[in-house]
Length: 87
Ligand SMILES: [Zn+2]
Image (cartoon, rainbow, N blue to C red):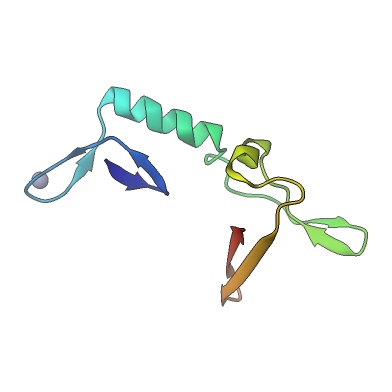
């Protein structure tokens, strides 16, 4: 099992150099996960709602806790990078 963007997925790992490769079947599972969580659509435009700004979140993230009413907190990494976590 290897970590791929926070998902634990099966992979073939070389005992010599730790290089990770996926079989066709493993790739299909990974592709399914990435498609499910919209990881092929990583960009969003900031929209204006009243006097606030907002970013929409793919509906598929609902089951992971990203849903209306959830509390999120953020940490500034630098001006362009912020880490947002659902509590
Ligand atoms: Zn190797």
